[in-house]
Length: 195
Image (cartoon, helix red, strand yellow):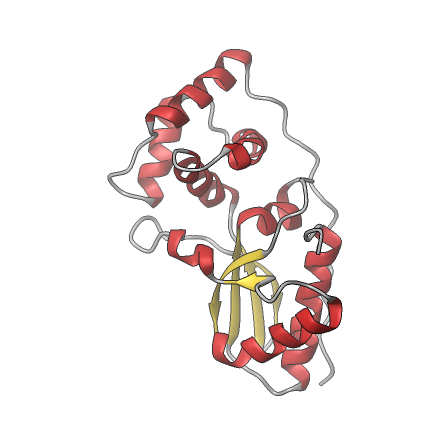
């Protein structure tokens, strides 16, 4: 599999909805973060390897995720909760954006300020993979100084601040000027499964 672009992300989520609802699965809640959240709601970007999410009802969902992987030729972990460990639980309450709601399945996308805080924290320890996403999020969130970046990180990850490597990266952006906001993708269209 080459990766999941926005079209494939939506295809996968639509499959989850239809299969979960036709199988009578209930109580499924997906809280999408990372590159998939950015593609769905905020700006066009390169394909992501997988959909990172905090998943409620994962035991019920696992066989359906596997079926979809087998049928579409996707990796077994195309939808996974590996990044859920990086979603803050002890900072400010997160205002998740619902993109699909039914009695059985609810899907949320992380707000841009949370995504930026997570990307800034990750940049300190990872490769340049997060750099373009950070650049795309800065004008959406309105972060244009190290002080505002520190405030954002501390809001979601109390006691954390911008690291040395991240500060150097951000200073280069701020000196050149935060780029203009990128065009938002079209509205998300997800339909209910069979009743």
